[in-house]
Image (cartoon, rainbow, N blue to C red):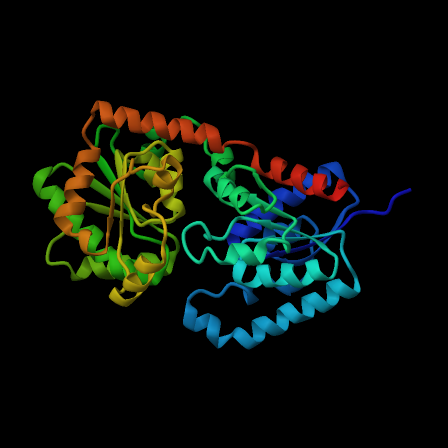
Length: 381
């Protein structure tokens, strides 16, 4: 009788915890006696992962914060390498967290452990040299997007596109009247959702801009209404403080959570770049992406980034289907004009929404099932 499969797994933040929980669930359907140990969030722990260190130790944002905890992170990685080289698992799965996991995968691969990396780092956009270090140290890269898989194929790194969990979760058609009823918005209202980001720094840079855009749009269309969902109470208080400082009042409903409901209820969305743009595309919402960084950060990144677009809908389409207004282009008038255009019905708008539908179909592959089958197939070989 064969022994149970033993998996080592490391996730670094909440999004990785969601992916990991789905992957583990599907593996357990096929191998109920499999065991898992590593670094996991609450969802993965609920699936039976034995915790070797809390996930919070990896949840570090920003260069300064990472440098401040570099010694601790290196010590943690060294202890995991020692543990898994002395007690080798059948396979190691690193979920996102590339700065931590890629080095861990390199060391474990040298020790003879098969390695999988789930969620591609943005090597296709910047620091492409990292791909050379992955070659020969990662036995399988699992990507969420097809353009990422093409990049790794060119680099001759084993890869499989598994689709995106959001495409699996979000239905092809959404219930706008239901979302409006839940938020107390009239069925006939013309509504714009404002999503300036989930981090304090993003709201600091984009919150005032987005609200000024709302004021500019109101001068053109006085009947407009706005909803602004916040990721938590702290961000909600931050937004309300900005609203209080404005010299005018706005018809803005500030929400504690509910970003998806806000987008579903809206006629158009103004958002910071990020996963929200993918979600907006899957919800088939007309949108504008606007983003600002500090001048120094933008100067550095603009010289490092090797892609023409920053939002996922445009990267997937390989052309600009969603207006992107970045840095100096992100003026109130530019953003407001682009946003009002999203409210107009046109053949171009219909083509864009059809493209969103096609992309939704392409990304809906039952990601957790595909990922589990790819991992188990690697083990068979």
